[in-house]
Length: 111
Image 1 (tube, rainbow, N blue to C red):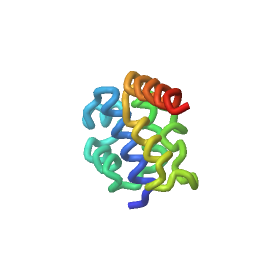
Image 2 (cartoon, rainbow, N blue to C red; image 1 turned 45 degrees about the horizontal axis):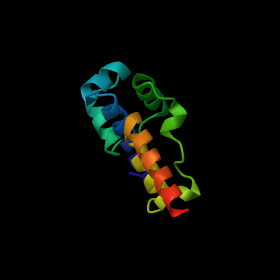
Image 3 (cartoon, one colour; image 1 turned 30 degrees about the vertical axis):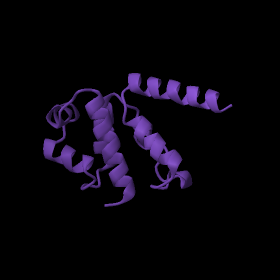
Image 4 (tube, helix red, strand yellow; image 1 turned 90 degrees about the vertical axis):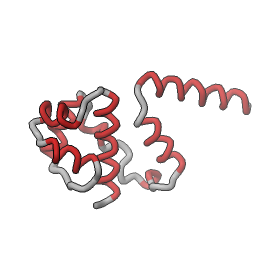
C-alpha cells in the first residue's frame, strides 16, 4: 500500500492506544469490523473516506487531524521534521507537553 495509507493507519493506531481502546472497542464505536480496523492500522486496506470519518468520530479526533502533513514535501519519510512530527503525534498529551518542555530547554541551552 501507499505511504499515505501506512501513515494514516499508524495515526489511527496511535490515537486508539492513547484513548485506551482495543481494536474491538474502536470497531464497535465506529460501526466497522475489528478485522477491518486492524487492516487499516497496518496500512493493508485503503479505507474509504466514510470509514475514516467514522473512525475519527469514534476517536474524538477531527478528520483533518488524521491527514495533517501527509503528502507535504517536507513530509518525506526520512525527513527529520516529519519523523519528529510522527513521534510527537504518537505520544499522549502529557508526553507531548513533556517533550516540548525538553525541546525548549535544549533550545535555551544552545543559545
